[in-house]
Amino acid sequence: AITSDGLCVSGSSDNTLRIWDIHTGECLHILKGHKGEITCLAITSDGLCISGSKDPILRIWDLHSGKCLHELTRHEGSITCLTTTSDGLCVSGSKDMNLCVWHPYSGKCVHVLERHASGVYCVAITPNKLCISVSKDNTLCVWNPYSSECLHILKGHERYIKYIAVISDQMCISGSSDCDLRVWDLKSGKCLHVLKGHKGSIRYIAVTDDGLCISTSDDKTLRVWDSYSGKCLHVLEDL
Image 1 (cartoon, rainbow, N blue to C red):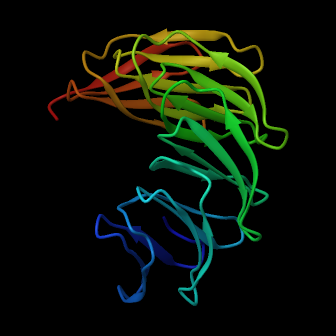
Image 2: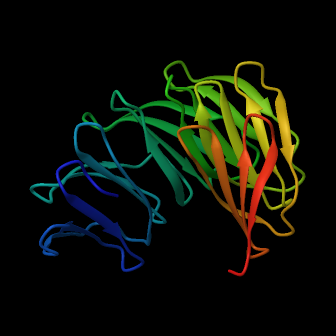
């Protein structure tokens, strides 16, 4: 994770985080406290660092002092993913099947989001602050993280979903080990397009500002899609 003032934060399987100055290459702090591998990181809008671990604890850090401000202990399984909202909330997902909504400054858990039937593996926030989570139960859930209401459960993938990316306030795209990508309307909960072509599990998705989607797969190709029409524009091979 990289901050706006030129710091880089890395997490490792040695249970530590390091804060680096990207201009000088200097390691400024080594952050110790976790008892398990670091699995995810996020930077809040006001510059705090949040780390998730297999221990399964989240820690809130002051990047400039290197001090741990809070230890968040609500999850009962490894932390797998986390993200933040523009107004400073943090949402974490875990193998315990739940998501937790946190206030980083107080260290308090605001809500526990319970609906998935298996571990949560990816979470994202839309520009209008909806939360989207995906799970090994093959579903996506769309949440209001401020009220804890589950707005939609999106079904269609035949195997577990590995990644999601936000396209706009009202659209997201998911990639699954069933080799397909799906574009969803978050307002209605409907699947707009099923993107077929990959011959292996989807590994990663990136979305450009103008709605192009790039997907990577175990089939050793990248595909470029128009997420609004569902058409495949390019297949990038020889990887």
